[in-house]
Image (cartoon, rainbow, N blue to C red):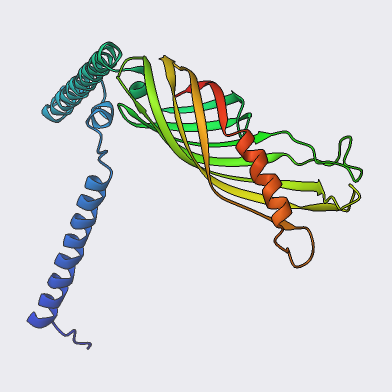
Length: 280
């Protein structure tokens, strides 16, 4: 005869605890899955319900979607209003600037070309009106010249001068058409060649390079109309240094070349310059 052992209370308690734990785990997993699948967008949540669904949850989702759409429309209207106010403010500032400020202030930067007489007779200028009546400028210019040949007659090599200049103009008024006075510093260089005469009237050709520094003063008038710049001025160059050297390996200083170079610059120290350009 077989005897079956009755289950103990401890075994029944362990089984009940395992069953409860598994049931709780299933409920937690099910709840987590439900929350994770809900969309963040209120309108997306509203669309997840059937149109015929009239439950309280569905109605709340639809109300949240309508509220979200209303807030987005208000935000868009606020942005449009702010943009309209900014445009009106910019238009007022532009109108005030055009009525009270000169074209030099509205368009302070300019690129200009110049032509005329003097140490340099053509070139390009970049200018900047830093104050209402003060303009800073940098220019590079040239003057085409030729050196003498070995016989001292006819034409020879290219001895074109190249001049770098920085300067300032002070306007005697803040109108678009105003007189001005200016001052600046120039550095000039060129190739040189002269016939070194001897007792018989001839001699070797001295070839080298010349360099000079000068201060300049100017006076003239300028017309600034919108993006256009026009000016006419008289310029005087005062030489503060001249030097020249031969084209040998030692770059030997040459007083003969220097005297000819200095005389050439002094002949062109008076000049008239016309400038025209575009401002922005």
